[in-house]
Length: 307
Ligand code: NAP
Image 1 (tube, helix red, strand yellow):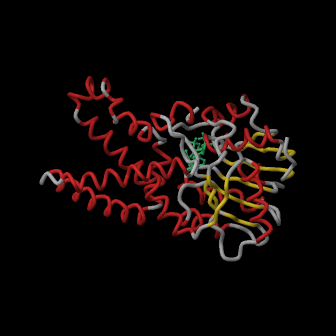
Image 2 (cartoon, rainbow, N blue to C red):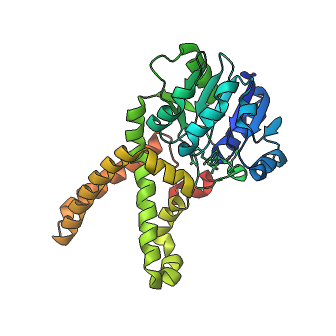
Image 3 (cartoon, helix red, strand yellow):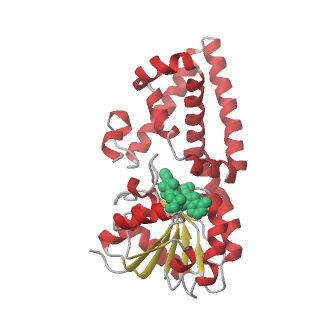
């Protein structure tokens, strides 16, 4: 058990991310009360069956009342509606944060609704899987992973330190970024890879003749690794695409240019160019392993990490 960091924590949204946070809070004893809120009675019932909190409600406003920390874990496109719902229940001094994969849009949606005296600190834990819902979460998801805060200019330093301490208790390393910079970085490290995966799996699916047999049968040749990303939650990824539009379009333009370069090198038999690129990319993989962001085993360590 760790020390109690907050008296009452409200978790709004209890899918993969919300339920993983809940499991860690319960396991580590980080709060006296954990109030769970989700919009559907069905998900709420499941959260209760899983014993993720100490109280349950479909009303985000009720959950946020008297909470010392409110963590919003819903698709980014739903941020404004949640902010509107909780605004009048928030007590002075409360910390409100989120886990959304895009930051400038979430700030634009939530910040205008935050009452005076409430500390709104946008956040994004860089951890997850392709699964969704409360059953998909697990304790330890955030261990060794980064949690990035994109604080507003007038953010209270004590509140930021308290929230940082919370994520560190979950095993995360914390960092700070400007929201626009966050959105650019995430466009390349997360959003573009998912879009490429959705695209390549979609292309294969369009080739119906082979999809039914060979694509699935021989998928372990490389295709399979894309299907994991392409199995990610459609609503979450629709919202990411629509709410980080500019940075994603910029990265897609660069990607298309670089792909054309590769295409040309293949067409003209320029093996030296291929070797140069493939060697550079192999070094990137080594750096990721050295940075502790993956383990050096076949299959990207999937069978050991994605449990
Ligand atoms: P999830 O498993 O699909 O859970 C989504 C939660 O949000 C559920 O409680 C759901 O409620 C609720 N919800 C869905 N649509 C809503 C709406 N329109 N209004 C209010 N509530 C709504 O999602 P998740 O993977 O935990 O993702 C949550 C957030 O974390 C997203 O913003 C995502 O960008 C971010 N994130 C995800 C990952 C990842 O790998 N998945 C990683 C880092 C950050 P009901 O079930 O009751 O409908």
